[in-house]
Image (tube, rainbow, N blue to C red; front, side, top):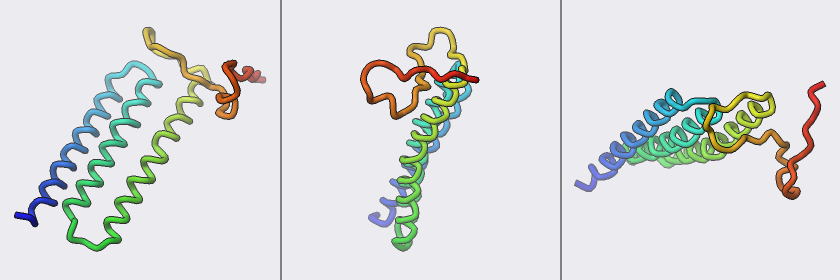
Amino acid sequence: MSDEAPALAGAVLSLLGALFFLASVIGLLRLPDFYTRAHAPTKAATLGLLLTALGSIGLYANRDAAFVLEKLLLILFVLLTAPVSTQMLVRGAAARGVPQAPGTLGTPTADPIEALGEGDEPAPKRSSN
């Protein structure tokens, strides 16, 4: 019975990861504009990959330590890069003037990152000459 527990936990985690991937796809298809669509894959797919990788560790728990280390490095890489890349895409879209859907609350910022911590005033807009 104890040999089956990691495999069962791995299967459950992998299934939960697949459900988060499905939620990511549904959000990508149903949300109205670029900014909200960028949110769905970042959150749901990142968590889906995390759960799927942990499930893979559980399913193949009897492998060597290099396999587990590989999956943990994959999780770390995705957790560090997915939010940053999405933030840069959203900032680029805001800088180019990509419109938001009507009724969307808030406005995306295209200010340089360095200027965001320097008080309450946004950075001056750059001319597009």
